[in-house]
Length: 335
Length: 85
Image (cartoon, rainbow over all chains, first blue to last red):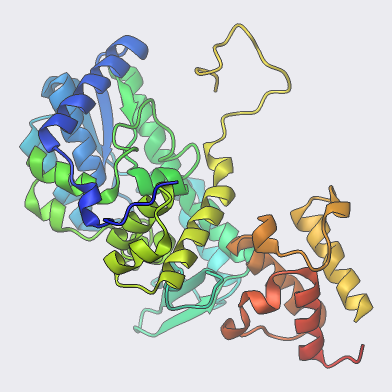
C-alpha cells in the first residue's frame, strides 16, 4: 500500500523525449517483428488521441509507412474532417477520406437509432437532433442513469430518462459507426500490408469507453498506457497542431454536440485522470481530494464508480471464450 | 410486502443472476457491493418497477437507499403504492 503524502498533478509529468523514444522502439518491435507488417493505418478523428497515435507511428515507422483515414458521416462535425486534414498535412502522411454516411444509411443506422429514441420521445423524427447524457458524477444522485437530450427543428429541447430498450437500441445502432470505420481501417491495412493502430488513451481503454469490434479493435494500441494529461504533453512535444490540442474532447457520434464527460466519464478529464491515478496507486481519497478540489467523500465515490465501471465493462476486453484450450495457438495470441 | 419482495427477488434472479446462484443472494445484500447491478441494471429495475406497480419513478428517487437491495426496493415500492404489509 502506497502512503504518499505528496500527491499532485505532477505525477503525470513525463520526460517527453524519452517516453516518445521508448514508444517508437516498441512500435517498431510490435509492427515489424511481432505483427510482421510494414506500416500502420490510423483512423483520424481530428482529436488529440488519434493525432498523437499517428504522430508516434510516423516517427517510429517513417511518414511513408503511415496511412491516415478520415471517415465522416451525417452526425460528425465538419471540424473533425478539417482538423484531421491539418494533421495529415503537418505529418506529411498519405491519407484517404471515406464518407461512411451511405453505408450507415444502408445498414439502417440512423433509422434504427431514431426508432429507439421514439420509444421515449414519440414525436422524434426528421430534423431533430439528439445526444445521450449522464448526470454529473459529483453533483448528482448516486446512480448515473442515461438520458436522451433531443432538440426539435424549432429549437425546443427535451431531456428524457431512457428505458433499457431505448438505451440499448440507440447504442446498438450508433455502434455501427465505430464498426464500419474499423472495417475500412482493416480494408486499407490489408491492401497495404499494414497493421491497424488503435487510439485509446488509458481512461478510455481501462474504463471500457469503446465499442467492441469497433474502435476497441486494433492490432496495437500505442497510447493505451497514457493518462489523458500525458497524451496532451506528448502532443505538444510531437508538434500536433495547436488547434487540435485546444479542441475539447468530443464523441463526435451524436447530432447534438456531446462531450466525453457527458456521455461517459461524468467528470472533467483532468479530474478523472487524477482520480484514476489515485485509485490505481492506492492513494487515499483524502490526498487526491486537495488536488481536484473535491471533498474526500466525493473522491471516494469516484473511486467506487471507476471500480464498478471496470467490472461492468470487463466483457468488452474479453477475447472469444473457448470451451477447452487449443494448445497449438499460443495463449497470448488467441482471439 | 412479502409478495412484492418475492416478485422483486424473482426479477433480480432472472435478470442479473440469470437464474443461477440464487442461494447466494440474501434480500438485504447490497447490489453495489455484490457488483451485480450497474447503472444499466438500475434502468432495468426502474423499468420493471414502473411497469409492474404502475407508478413513475422520479429522478430524485434514484438513490441507493431505494434500489440497492431486494429489501430496499420492496420497501420503496411499498411506500409508493401504499400497500399495507
